[in-house]
Image (cartoon, rainbow, N blue to C red; front, side, top):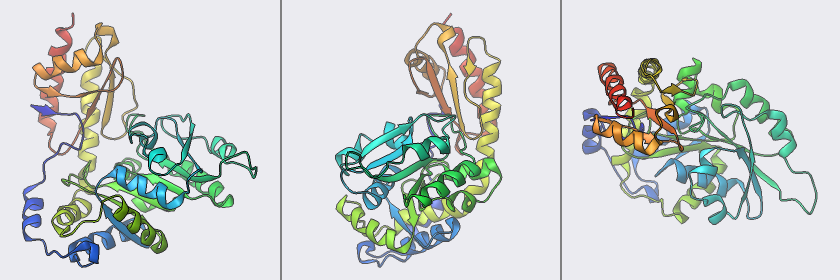
Length: 343
């Protein structure tokens, strides 16, 4: 079975498994796990931030950022189809008492002028703008890269209004690889950053949030309140260190495989790639086949390919390090057979 549902489905490498077994550990709630400390220090240095914190997931990292930056009754500005708005179970409202103000972007990128106009003025009728969030890469925009220049304009505007900026950078290293820049080039235009160790970087679990020392000090308390305080977490941090220091350089392979898959799919009658493939996500429209995305995913499964529905007639494929270039060729053939079943 060729699993293209997500880059979260990867299995830890043998090096990661060995690192987990050999990890030096301690009680991280007491700040005594040396492997966690090393991971956090390494992540902060790579991002160009003062400090970092290991959290259980990207969603937890994003919610800790909201809870740390904002107060109940405030508002966050974010793109209309961003992960925080779309896929985090309404947590900003349920946990933070914060409302969302969404802005329709173009391929995930918000117009800086629109963001500026959305920042609330001083009026007792309005909620206070507590945070601006930028998702990079943008999942529902098909893994689109939000350009550095766009982020700079939003960040500089936000600073003039004393509003913090957060990057939901679950796949930020994919963005850096695609743009051909250092990840710091993106991170410099945000007060805080979240990225996942368990997506394209291939670790079995965990995410990082990073920012100032003061931010991380407060965030650590929120992590505890959310049940995210972990004990001998070095067994999680050890594969995370490998992911962070050894897996970023191979993300280009996933991007190349995504382009190869997209080119193959475009040659199949009735299927159309509807996103500009910049990173490791391909979104395919199946409506010309006369089936729903759910039906087509079922046909794919019978042909040995796993994918995910991404709307009524759209299917998402995500390349990852467990899928080789040869398997991409096999996947194209299987997708073609699945398409023939619909006729």
